[in-house]
Image 1 (cartoon, rainbow, N blue to C red):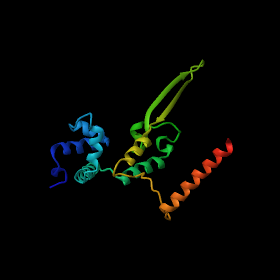
Image 2: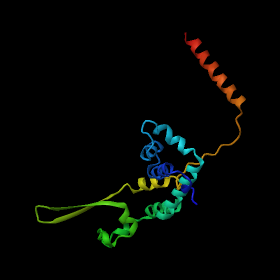
Image 3: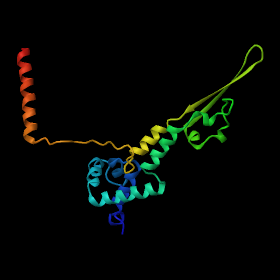
Length: 185
């Protein structure tokens, strides 16, 4: 029996709604909880161990279904970083037909603008302008998505700070602030 099956129907609906947008208040309201109390119900539901297990299962299943993980995101970014413009140009420096482009270039270009100009002597000049899309931003969002974590920030903390040390530092800041205020009057 899955963790989701162990929840009541409303909790199951909360889980299904939550993984759509990761907004606990909206998920609670969409699952049928009172809109007036959804902002309290959502966070309360998220700390429920059964719901946490069900969410982990649902997210894992979705990632497997979509075949999306940190390796996938990083591989796509690597393809784009390694893409060379010469891959979409012929030997004369002219833009190839998009059907001939490698897949990374097909993904990276959002539009092609073709301008044709004829001068006074009848000479025709064709200019092609390609516009890259904002795909890296979309990949970043996917990478930051829960359980993909391709761009998860890592913070290393070394040493220990005791409560006594923190209190001592706070007392010093208060004394310094008081001293500055007294000298200013």
